[in-house]
Image 1 (cartoon, helix red, strand yellow):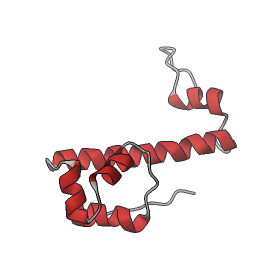
Image 2 (tube, helix red, strand yellow):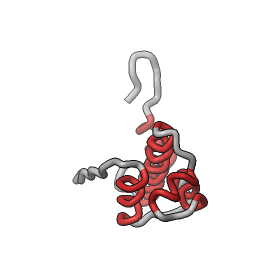
Image 3 (cartoon, one colour):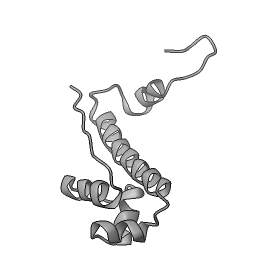
Image 4 (cartoon, rainbow, N blue to C red):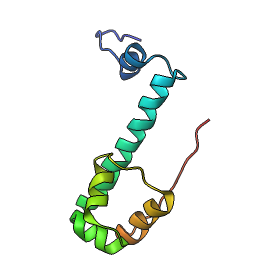
Length: 100
């Protein structure tokens, strides 16, 4: 939907490039975006706590390259590992929501 100022929304751009929600190409994009978003959230939390990737890795029992791959959306992450990074490494809690 175009606004009065002729601004194109993200959904309009994605609809044109990948199809409407429900289209397999669009669903794949949405899935990849969530992985990217998770990496950004973890990186923001880490830098807010003034931790290097290596320090975070040491705190949660993994290695720097794995933290880097997660932050750069280059690696799938298991829920148990994600929880360990958030709880042990960052001292936080993971809260999930489900949208249908």
